[in-house]
Image: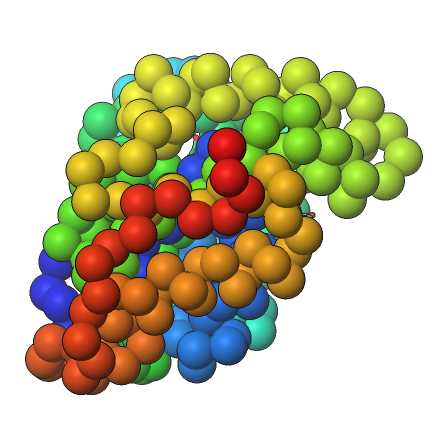
Length: 247
Ligand SMILES: Nc1ncnc2c1ncn2[C@@H]1O[C@H](COP(=O)(O)OP(=O)(O)OP(=O)(O)O)[C@@H](O)[C@H]1O
Ligand SMILES: Nc1ccn([C@@H]2O[C@H](COP(=O)(O)O)[C@@H](O)[C@H]2O)c(=O)n1
């Protein structure tokens, strides 16, 4: 990736807080946000909307040229459009979570979306961008100056996810989260930190503490002082390898 925009790369399993924490971090730093999971979800939405079978890889690949994704990088909203339709809320529905892994495991889909992510990040109007997903630290932006694995114990992630859902949506949310992690882990490893990636474990941290822990890593690596087109203007400290609750 062209490194003119300061990139903070964040990976982690489902419900680890990637979207919410990344947004809060981006707001604090005045950075943009690129929620790559939203792109896979939007493609799942688009495939269903076109009446296609998400398990049919050939049909999904054939649909890619028509997939008119507009992924906002604004840290206050990050609106997602497919064509003219605002799908920001719809892509969070359980019916999308249930099929998105099938779409994300298709290599042609990953290649196409990764290419689009790189263009979006390079064109982002902000000085920096937080890119979050599953393969950001390893595939999408392996050279990013700040790379973080955001994690939390599975039961804590399930409890947080269940708490945010209302009524019947909460039923089965835990099982769906587990199933999605299992399926996604067959495609990319987002449970262990790759070399040079700092782990932030939020199991025993509240939301604000988690945001602080991520900002601490960014600061330790000189990320906040980065200026477009050059290296950090802070002295990058030795990268911490684990932040958050001692395990
Ligand atoms: N440290 C924390 N303490 C308490 N709640 C948290 C913490 N971190 C995240 N949350 C909450 O956990 C829920 C899941 O977070 P979020 O949706 O950001 O996770 P995610 O990793 O993006 O999930 P997914 O991959 O499934 O989209 C949200 O309700 C969020 O507010
Ligand atoms: N870099 C990524 C990001 C996401 N996925 C797939 O999209 C699904 C939804 O992602 P969320 O972050 O919104 O949970 C996820 O379950 C993966 O199937 C991906 O493959 N790579």
